[in-house]
Length: 196
Image 1 (spheres, rainbow, N blue to C red):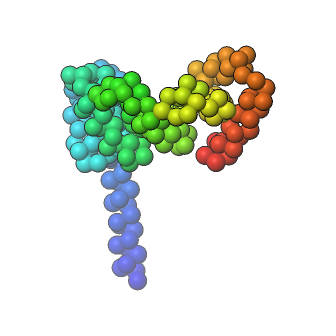
Image 2 (cartoon, one colour):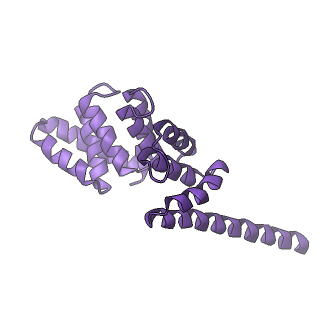
Image 3 (cartoon, one colour):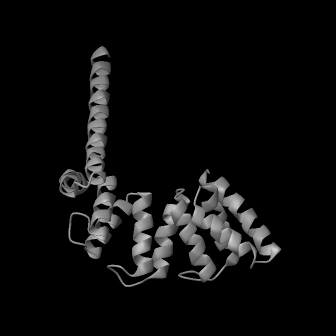
């Protein structure tokens, strides 16, 4: 039994140290990126991304989307974003939604944009929540629905998104009190569901 506990403790420590080293490696890439050393960031993130690290995949997607240290390539950005998004990375989901909404590297597809925005929004990403509200208010990729749009702006604003707060304030002058009331009620339900 003691031998089993020693082996279990050793394995736990080994896994914990591997995770810490992995996290530090991605952080070193971020430090290099922020310092403008895109080549170093790319060299750090690429092996991690190929190995399946969602955060590194998302960062590589950003590099390709922006042309930071690599030739701008929207299709390559989408490839990396999709890999990370399918693992649940909210920023990759949000960015993939943007690519579909703007038609960058793919045919413009509002329904697909809404799908990715919703995944990120349901995980608490305030930008995705705001964009989802915009999609509902404008009827892009979904049936136009002012209540749902307003509700997502309330949720996004509650999570600190100033653009959504501005959109809410502008909408309040154009929407009926009934729509606003229904939107606020729906927002409370969404916030309770997603844990914000």
